[in-house]
Length: 172
Image (tube, rainbow, N blue to C red; front, side, top):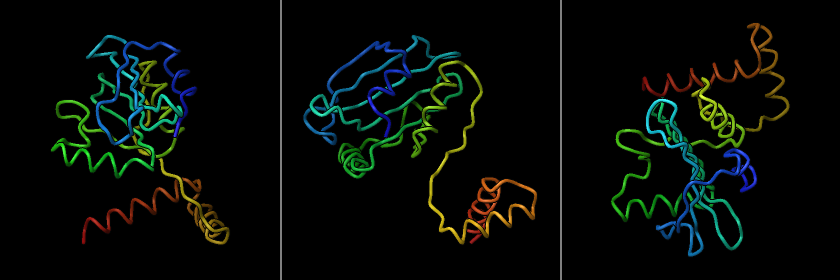
């Protein structure tokens, strides 16, 4: 999960709003800060963070890309279940960012940060979701050899394999 410092640097220390976080899933000391550039359409974006005012622990970060109608979010792994439970109890859609736009949940800090920087700069960005996983050395070596045989990178090989597995599961 990104830190308060990383978030503040993403928004150039420019905070436009702040308030107590009204849900209880993050505890009694949850506070939300936002940085919004004032536009809800082309060129518009907002960055949000929910954190503890006591420990500074970050519970959730999100970015809304109003130009492309996309919203990305990261929720601390310790809090996802509580967040989803509270959303259900409130009969609220846990994924809705605004209107017909749902959050796309991210797991990799660098993925979130790179999307934020591009959105803020008004530049195109990769909309795919990055995932991290560890491979045992022997499996990694086998995949590297297979990628070499196909004249592609290891990442491209893993992406290809994952896509094939997704396609198979959808056809079942």
